[in-house]
Image (cartoon, rainbow, N blue to C red; front, side):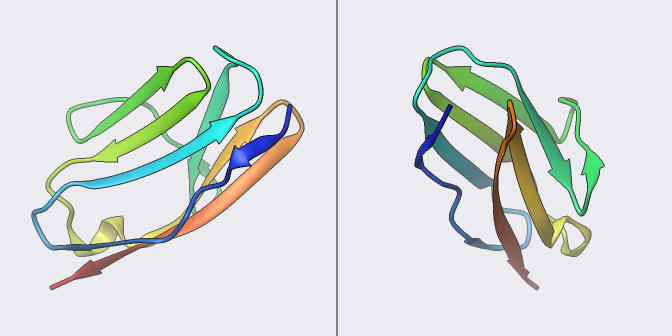
Length: 87
């Protein structure tokens, strides 16, 4: 598995929605999302979408504590990007 389009840094204003997106070479591969090294699960605030080769992490109603480095891990490959939240 290779990253065709790696994650890129995202900048949002507080209370806006931040979307991290990448594309990999194989479709429907399981992925793990991490925030500052800790696994993220989908919930009220975060949505994890797999659409073929595209993987998205959506952070709704961004707050200052959402500002962090995010990593996606697919098989033995990873891609990282930062989310910056403007107050």
